[in-house]
Image (cartoon, rainbow, N blue to C red; front, side, top):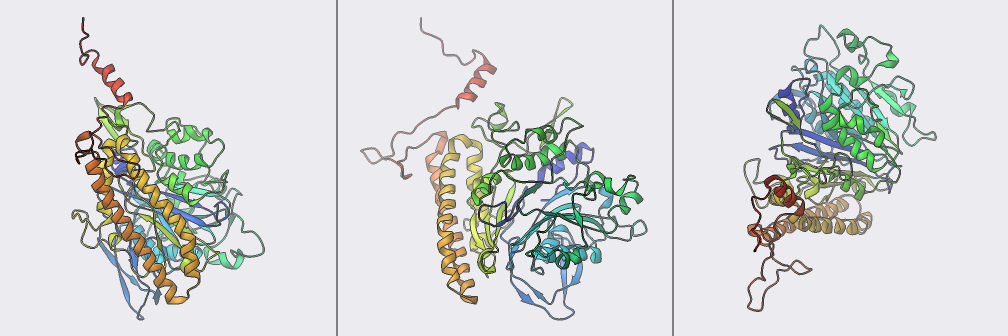
Length: 573
């Protein structure tokens, strides 16, 4: 999941491309139904990730919590446990707080090897302690200042039912004689009528140039209440040492008003723009009348280009389905499109993906592949929906898929639930143990059948995926009306049973899809089916004659162009 920053070295270039993530943020007045949304593709080759569940609990005074690095399970140390911790499902908790992340790396010398809290642990520790996004910001920044931040540079999406923030954080290295502070961080409140995104490149630039109102994180609620009489201005919070540290290290010399966080600590280079910012561009492009002015920046080739804004006001209200579509994006209809470029990188069956690593060398020259939002290596994908219009048990719906967002349905998991479906639990499976009862493995099994024969097989997968998504949408209102009629533990039990039922139904349908694909597309042919997907039989009871589609036309033309008359059938005289 972490992206090692490519500073200028080719070796780093291949590392970053193998592990990376994408987050989208939608403010409550930018969404179609008043929801705050956070999305997250957790992209990590080889990683096996279940749907995490941390039950609510009470803890004894003096109790300590062991911290293990999320990516490696390396033991880092202990911290004091909170007296009470909240129920967490995935990256959302029972109070409708959601935290996502993307790693941008930054300057290598800023990593604090003495820190106890890594970025992943910081997320889940905070979700177990915070009731609001603002409380989460205070907890996150105080924890790393007390215990040290072990990871590289990170961008966090921090949101609740009322608002969303983007927090960027880096350590200050292991040497306290250079800087007493443990971290440099900045958090910007995303306007309620705006959308934002980040994708493994630090995005916060200048924040003291008059566009934002500065406030201490501990003073947020007192000075700028969320639902007060006055609108909340564009707010920014930051660590006291954020500029001082850059000056001390010789990375910044100008006026405070000119200070840019990413210019000082994680300046975008070609990879940061083309592999990372291009994904942000693709999201913004969906909700802008014309975003072509930022194509040169996202392309990463030209040096002096206009960088994208941190957030935009969308040209329409953003729906849950819009976010599903955005999470399944491969730059379709844009200059970076993978489905219409006409190159052979997608294989015979025009797969809108490219192999990793993203850069490769041939005859001493380096080349690159596009890196879309939807990608092979996604371990899980979610769309977290938070709604102030509903009780907290119902308002937080965590739409979850255990693979590439393009290849799965987003199954509803309410954040109050006290158990998760067996298929999402990780029970009986891990990164090298396949299980037919595990969603990660069954979904990946289906995806990996489809990828090599994408144009042939994807329509079948898409039909099943979309039918499940549509069924969940139809049931959501009805289910929530039923939940509203219940109270307390009865409501939680009802939503737990509903979420687990949907998980069980999803994996059963995906197993059925896997068996169907094996039969229908066996041996590179297509067995005919009726409109209901039932295999047709001939009058003798066997399957009807198979269809042999051969090469897609575009590939056939390329093949003949490359081989000339080598495969031409002689004409009869």
